[in-house]
Image (tube, rainbow over all chains, first blue to last red; front, side, top):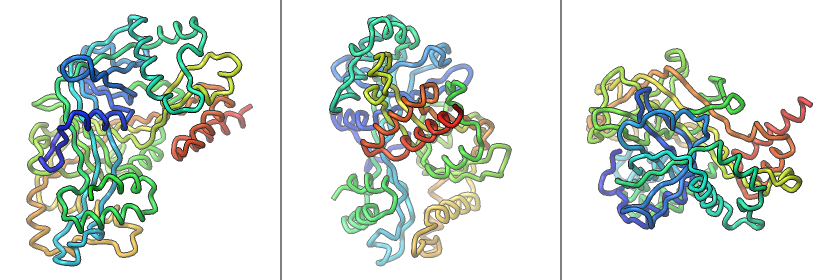
Length: 207
Length: 214
């Protein structure tokens, strides 16, 4: 990944927050048959290991865990993104030296990959994922709501992923390198856009 | 990507549409320095090659264009929409309790062969096409000629083109297709009530299609 200093995120809590907000990661491994990629909800245990550990699970039928991993795995967490028209820049009217760009944010985590199918460990993973994603719901579902035999059968159908993080990099490209007037123009333009996704990016433009 | 039959989206036009609506893709490469990911807006030429061809550009300072060799296999992932599905939304949960959470999403994986295009004419064409695509629909679309010529010429020197001939376009629409219509409908409505507007209508359509088949 290419992260110019202006867009680099190094603050650990901020990187963790970005991963949490993204929720669905792209879990990528290199194998002798080429790269495998699976969209996967993953969570980070911040207290485990030196820099945290990522957890998730794959369907047992997914070939990705059956292929030997070459090197480290890569988990990519994407945030919101938007096209930025130069028409929003105040500087366009001044000297016209402007071009379009694309704003986005992403976190890239690398680490050695362990696949496991111990049912106790798998139960711990699905319980943590459940608690994370059910939080805030009015009638929260929990693993205990389903019959134990049913859960046991479900656990036999998945394989766990454990990825201790060796490298965590973040990129937040949100017009930070533009002047205050340009940023204000971008913020306003995105907020007024017909695309709902642009409104989400609008609040990410620093004032 | 693991794609069970009931989640498969094989229609080229649907996947092309997905890419064009959500052009910021993650380019996954496995070059000299190993596995890497770069987020880049892609321009799709639908009729170029069997499955289409992707065009993009990166900053010259981005090591990726020197990390891969021409002809190497790369992967571009386009993931536009996803949502957590709570079992609380399934009517069958109330009856039997035999449900677990899942995650629904619509995704396209474009596998292809890369060609590095470090030439002025190519990058000029790519940025012109990207500009035209993304300025379309604006009341006063910006054009490259709105900027001083020498400014544009300088900037073009600082980017390098990447062309990817798609050899395999794999689509996955994971929308509870393996569930009962009532559960799909229940989950779609639960999702919609939470304000979600992309996955829920797609799920509702699956429920409608399933109910029509009965």
